[in-house]
Length: 113
Length: 116
Image (spheres, each protein chain N blue to C red):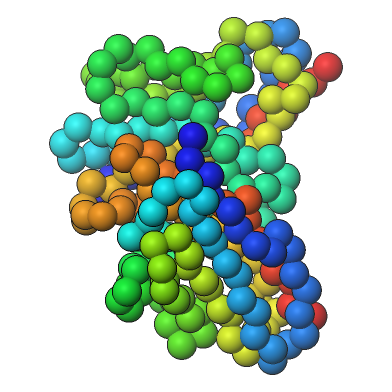
């Protein structure tokens, strides 16, 4: 099946700094990618839809100025958590869709200290 | 709106016994249904999908699921559980809106514990 690669797999940063997470579709082009957030022992919640060459679409309640999304090419979307705070600590997962099913990155564990 | 429900937070089963993880769905139109598995601190792995065709769908690692239209269910099953099957399982449905990509809507997840 298709491969979606996410980097880094884990990151620890200090409060107030910014962190960038990359999501790449390795063997197919993805005009649309999705970013999810998962809290411990909870399901995945969609944060935003990343559109190649245009602005991302954010779900209700997600701060677009805090979670910056850039989809500059057909194989790369990035999520930047700006001015990170401890409450931003979470597991972030990206997704790209094939013809019928979605493929997911391996996730990024962000810890803000 | 498309949605799925997983009524059980946790399922416990002994190794070698059959397992079932339940999922019910609510969709408008024909459903695209999926099962994913997540191991600790890992992304999601695709197990199987139902789009159309046979109601019994076979997937990875010996898992299968039965699409039941009258009961709006898509339960995940395996004839003989392994300890290594212990993980978090998500039922999901494709949001049919939009073009160029689609949202995946997840159930709350069911944690499966297989005891040796």
